[in-house]
Amino acid sequence: MKVLALVQARVGSSRLPKKVLRKIAGKPMIVFLLERLTHSKLINDIVLATSDCQSDNELIALAKKENLKYFRGSEDDVLDRAYHAAKINGGELIVRVTGDSPLIDPIWVDRLIQFYLDNSNRSDYAAFGKSFPEGQNAEVFSFKLLEKAWLEARLPSEREHFTSYIWTHPDKFRIFRMDAEKDSSAYRWTVDESRDLKLVRKVVRALYAKNPCFTMEEILRYVSENPDVMRLNQKIVRDEGYLLSLDKDKRK
Image (cartoon, rainbow, N blue to C red; front, top):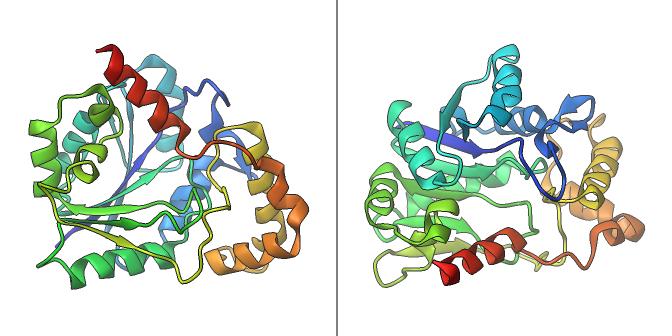
């Protein structure tokens, strides 16, 4: 079974323009993220899934320079983009990661993949639960499930946040969520604003030199010992992008 990681990213961002190209440890954030995923032992292939907008030409130029696999598709219909990226690249089991999660832990991603495989006779979809920090997000599902969502999803939010059709329909799909041993939901490691990027850079400066594949536990230990770092991006609403997308559904 081919395990394909789809990393969803675009240059456009209203809150932090060109955030995926901002430097972390001297590298564009998207490159830093993709390099972390290469430490996974269960992922067979990684594809950057971006849009066919002219604004993302800069991202494609970077992908070519770094010899990264990429796919270009619809700007707004991310579900369509993901479906065709997976189909063309032969993914049988899909791991979805967003390009604004540079601190994603590949060890935990492997645990999630294995969790899905161990429960595949009872689960259609597996993801980290809300007890994990925001930015430590990954989802695992089969290509067949992705295809079903692609055929059935209709709402703008379901096409933009392409796995939302799955996890908002527990009546149709068997959904498993992996919970952390301790509730770490108060921590925010995603990058949507300049405050987020400042926090991530501090974490990387503190941990990267000792271990380029530093773990979630190492990050938690560092921020707990340095509460001023955690305070950098407190009070930002979790999943704000998805909440804004739901407003589009109301206006449809």
